[in-house]
Length: 117
Image (cartoon, rainbow, N blue to C red; front, side):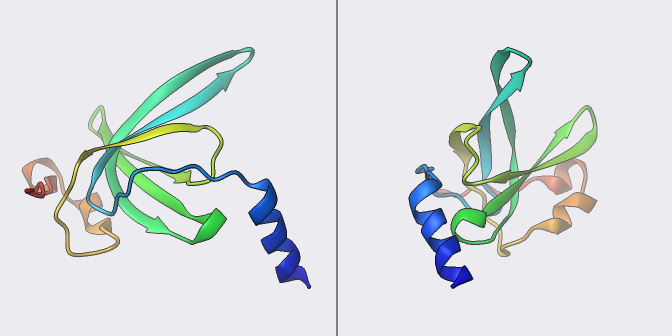
């Protein structure tokens, strides 16, 4: 009973957007809408996708970037109404679905090979 009710709400009330297909290792730019008081602005968050977790409405992805020499990670839900656009900048070649080993690497070792077409 509970499961059917949750599924009904997800199907009818949660709007889904279509984003380009990306995976762990890809460099993406997420355009995120930020509301500050009565003003709105769009902030670009560009980084490497570390992981994609969940399924359906609860699907999320983690993006990591280096800002001022400090690693910054942000988790975005796919179904967030604040995401206005996602664009894939580079396709990376990694052999894992979760690339947490990137957290320990700095400099040239933290580079990911680009996929050739």
